[in-house]
Length: 450
Image (spheres, rainbow, N blue to C red):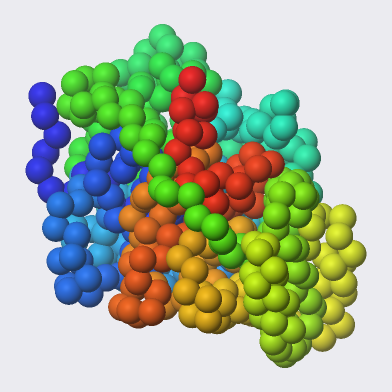
């Protein structure tokens, strides 16, 4: 048995970091993949003739259902045109969404209207990332422990979409009129070949073990083609597991690393405690932490002072790390909320302005210094910042922690040619993540797999 020719998986992600995570799963498993930042032109597509998977990154997670109605249909139409047997709407592995912002249900409705209205498997769990679903409830790791999602120390306090419901079907039911059911671990263990039988609408898939992931991959790959699925990079992990188990894909473990560099530039719009720990580590290990006044940026302040401070840090032999906050308890977070409320600024607009400002100062620094490696931290931040860099695609370069690899950026701007960029979600990565990127990544993947 062999895999069919052509594109195997085509996906659209609701943020840039998550979109890149799906690409890295496939690329490092031996399925060449490319991630575009918009529907590619024929010329751009032709530059990647050997890829077997194509993704489109969007900022849907930070937008309204009306925005989705306007922007997602052309993306789904393009994905369908690739002829891929699996079309995937990629969401965060911690379900960041609500009926009014980043609605997963709305995106599924749009996808079904274009791809077809069959059953939609929804797999958000990925045990390799410490994301688990049991009897419909989602659990996620944090530190040394695993928490039910509505009690998770980060997600229960998320500044935009705090999670108050761990039951995945209940959460999705608030965002769509489609019926939502669950294929439980009991069904996967006892009746694996019929776990999707007689189910309609959206079907959330439990997964606690690698065996469950292989079963889910078989269920998805066995659907009539093309099939529309939704979920995290768990979709890609499950497919790869199934392809390997059935001998359709050679077992490849790419743990290459890029070369270490003397200097990197990092920008962060994340307020996650995980990112806060990473910023503290970076400050103690050669990085110069520079605060960007987010409240000022959303009301029109310039970033010249931040740019100048970063140049001074580089000249002094330190790596600039420009951040809006050092974690959820930073006074800058409350100051930002107060400013949004006082000025009557829409939160969606505020997020866009902050991400754009970080992207603009990053681009100025890259052009001024000629440095070729950078990090953007924050799911929403990454999307808006990357738009400012004028990139059109990414390919995966070197793994680190799953979900936050080092990427090669593709651009028409010769001044940015050769740029290597890591996009890190707020909750992703170990405390020394910025150090991994400076060293070129690589070995962290081996530690996780071991």
